[in-house]
Image (cartoon, rainbow, N blue to C red; front, side):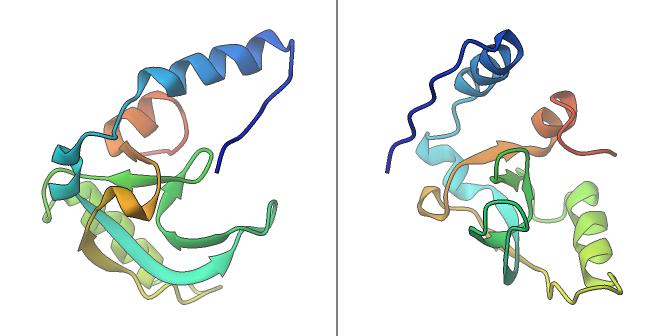
Length: 113
C-alpha cells in the first residue's frame, strides 16, 4: 500500500524529511519490543490500532523488554480509567507496521516523557 502526498506546505515537507531519515526497516529491529494493546479504531482516520503508537501511527519500540519507559507506559495504559487497553509487551516485527524508537519519538515531540 502506498501513499501519495501532494503539497507545497514547507512545514509538512520538513515533517516528511524527518520521517524519511528514520529507517527502522532493518531486521535488527525485529528483536526490539513494543506494547500490544486491545485493538481500537483511531478517532481521526478510523484505522485499527493494536500497538502503542506515536505520530502518524508509528509503533513505539524499545531495545530491551524491561526498559523503564516502556514499563511505565504499559502501566499507564493498564490503569487508564476511560478504556481498558489490556497492554502486553511483545517482540516487535516489521510485519506489524512502521515503527519508531521511544527516544526518537520524544525528540520529534510525538510523545511526552
